[in-house]
Amino acid sequence: MVLLFDQFNLPEDIYRIIFATEQQEVVGRLLVKYMQDNGGEIGKTEMGVFAQRLHDGEATVRIGQPPFQKDTKISYNKRQFYDRILTPLRGMGLIDYDLYTKRYRLSDKFNKIMIKIGLMWLRELERGKRK
Image (cartoon, rainbow, N blue to C red; front, side):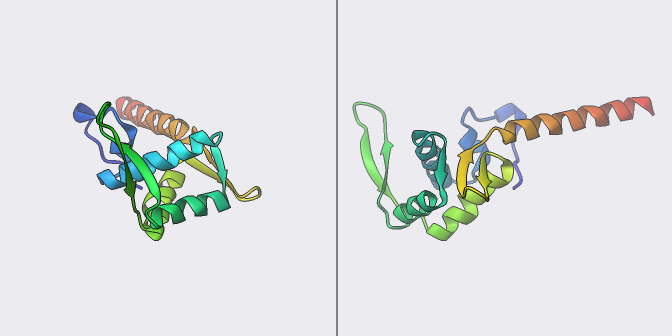
């Protein structure tokens, strides 16, 4: 996945940087919240149930500010969930999947990768100064 951002107009919300549409932001936020509520990890079956609930329109999200908040049901295609939400989160290192235990868990690999990329850039700058 490619992350394009403007350093001068960087949103405060990580989901706005990662996802292209507002609907994807909402679904990504729902997934991370669901995983956090379950100790930071869920099984393959639980992920499938989560995706199916989204597909069936049974998932709810709270919209608005108090005292005008209301719960709204949302629907998101199951295939698109895997293609546009889960796969990019895994690819970027925000969610990790253990093949042996068949469990998804929230991960800090994204942070480590971004630090590595920053260090690569610093090395490139140093190489340019030596020439």
